[in-house]
Length: 96
Image 1 (tube, one colour):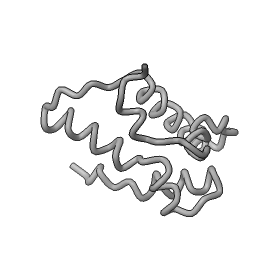
Image 2 (tube, rainbow, N blue to C red; image 1 turned 45 degrees about the vertical axis):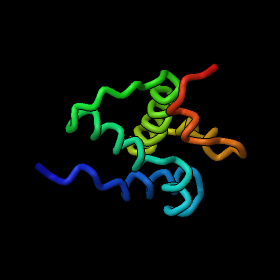
Image 3 (spheres, one colour; image 1 turned 90 degrees about the vertical axis):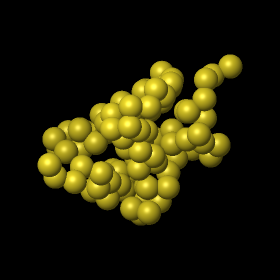
Image 4 (cartoon, rainbow, N blue to C red; image 1 turned 180 degrees about the vertical axis):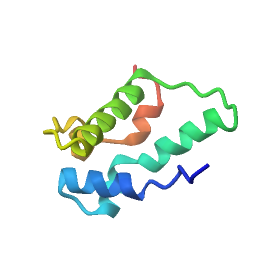
């Protein structure tokens, strides 16, 4: 099975979509952390609570990436991650 944990191409594509550097894309969008959560659930059998706002975030990035890969106009759904005050860790907690 090929190495599916390599996130550099995703970060490079997000970098291109949003006009930021690849390291900034990695630090902003946290795709590596999303992949780590997935790995814990799928491979380690951890029973992690995934809140709907984390699912919405993952979907937003997915749609941006898919549209870009297909040469379609993106809707920049993940742009809120670039806003001041965005904290990925907030997606891992329940909303009040």
